[in-house]
Image (cartoon, rainbow, N blue to C red; front, side, top):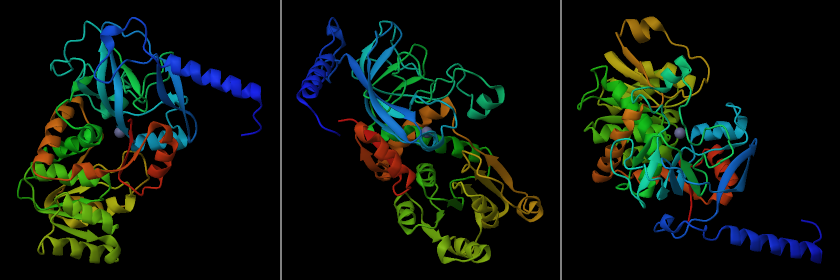
Length: 405
Ligand SMILES: [Zn+2]
């Protein structure tokens, strides 16, 4: 900052005082205050205004309509989608209020709001999440959305900017508009609530896997890739009673965590050069047998090529690692699929229906002592959202979250 003369100081002081006044009690909203105290006049919203640049802006908190819900945001996870937006803006949304893995407390709601999307009663002080999938059809998937080009998916945190701006969970207040998909998750703690969205991805994948009829409680299951997706995959399998799980990754720290999450054995691909040696190691971890079923949770084409070798004849594969197009993978259709009579399912994101299952999964995971909380490795305040994204891009941690104090 350059020289500050007296006039500038006066102007700054005036501005600070004004903004303090702005954030005071809104006139005539006496019924609006929840446990968190009065509702300020303005909300702070982290807007991605340019590539790799968020600015925390203040916008007026608008009138809450009869069907709307005003939520004081407690926290929001950073998703791979946010990382793509931050780096490349592939959806062309800048300026945009991001953050879709968020949760918070209802501080004001319109008189017509009585229940959440599942029919559970809603009241001031309840903790809620929104779901990113099309509200009118609980079974619709991202696949359908892409195929039919259905509009109005109501993804808070991926909406085009409008004159309200309170559209993303990287903020201190978000306005949930009438007709949105919202769930009362007051019975889950903050970290569990932040993990709902990524966990729903795995609930969906395991549902897809079960549709093959091959995945059973006593199956030998290999999970390849121990980032957040692979680790949560292991947790979901454990809550289903599947115990014979082998985790494959190149990072020892992640493999150790996979064991905490319930993998019985782990195999580092860095210690076994070549696919034959790696296959032997995976089979060795199962006592000399190939896997009945495999989950491919990395975004690496080579990992997709490799995973077929780990699976027995008549086995199954769920490929869920490629949220985005990372290129082609080479396989041998005769050896890898036909002669094995393999059953393969792909999985992408989730349906609204998977959300309800996810809430119970999180309770079961805690109940059997899985360290789900440890998936959130870094926490940042809203003001440090740029640093949080840079940390996320470095891939040093697992889940990075913005936590409001
Ligand atoms: Zn996400």
